[in-house]
Amino acid sequence: MTNNNIISFEHVKIACKSCTLNSLCLPMGLDQGDVEKLDAIVRRGRPAHRGDHLFREGEGFRSLYVVKTGSVKTYIPSEDGGEQVLGFHLPGELIGLDAIDEERHHCSAKVLETSAICEVPFKRLEELSLTLPSLQHQMYRLLSKEISHETDMLALLGSRNAEERLASFLVSISDRLLRRGFSATDFYLSMSRNEIGSYLGLAVETVSRLFTRFHDEGRLKVERKHVELIDLDGLRTIVENSDHFVNKRKRAT
Image (cartoon, rainbow, N blue to C red):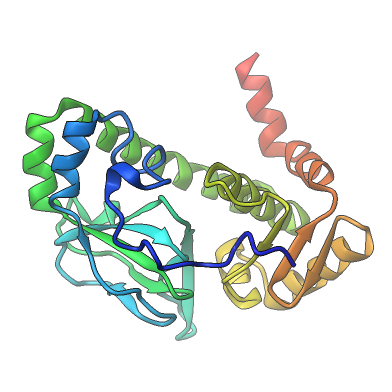
């Protein structure tokens, strides 16, 4: 296994202007002076550990959170007393946008592995955005991205079979890691098979069976949570040939 995914906390408190994620996060589009103003309101604490909560469902909304290193899942209680996973959040991604309207969290956010988290107090962010139009534009962009993600997720669950769902999940993780400077084909999945199944609306047995099938077909190598995508193009083909993508291409023409 490569060491592309080894987490280092040596520079966990590095300023926004020097962060390798600033092209994906709130500083995007801001000049250096404005980034420094944003950096002044960001709180950076100790690394969070697996099982720690950033917030819980029903809590009052105070801050947005940005994953700097590591990963976080959002979830709500399921009918069987377990967890219904709503999403997995990787470095550079913002968590908590859904709580802005009613000023309370509609889900919980739990750390999946040792992670560095930036906390952005929303009231101070709101005040700052009034004087920085570029920051306000970036907030609109991130909100739009959140809505787009939810739309894609509904399409994923509503129009794709099990194979297409898992292929789409793996391609999405690959693309998101690549944008963050990680390997697109060799990575460690911090979430369990059960959590992946919950997110994709599949039984854990189905997820495990599909991983085995993709492995046997030469599409990937998998050893516990380590995944190496051997045939990324083949996985993309599975996704792009699904009814959702075919219909999307037809609407675009």
